[in-house]
Each structure stands twice: as C-alpha cells, then as structure tokens.
Image (tube, rainbow, N blue to C red):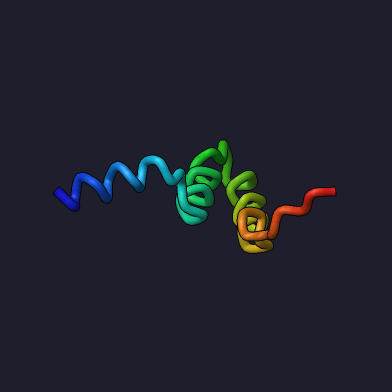
Length: 53
C-alpha cells in the first residue's frame, strides 16, 4: 500500500534535478555538443536559484 502511494507521490512531484540533468545530457547530438552540455551542468545550469525580475 505504501509503495503504491510513494510511486503516486513521486509522479506528482516532477523530475528531480539529477533527472533533468541526465535528460539534458542525453539530448546531445555530437561529442562537442555533449562537452558543452557537460560544462553547462558543471556550471550549475539546473542548480541555480530562480530569479524573478
């Protein structure tokens, strides 16, 4: 029962930062693109605080 509840809550929660980074890296179309995306992730592309201004 609790396992099913956990899966439902996880799907409602949305993707984690690690999942978003992984999907972003998977979208690379070449080695050069992958290297650029790795630099973006290392620079904190998905870990920066959101600014509203």
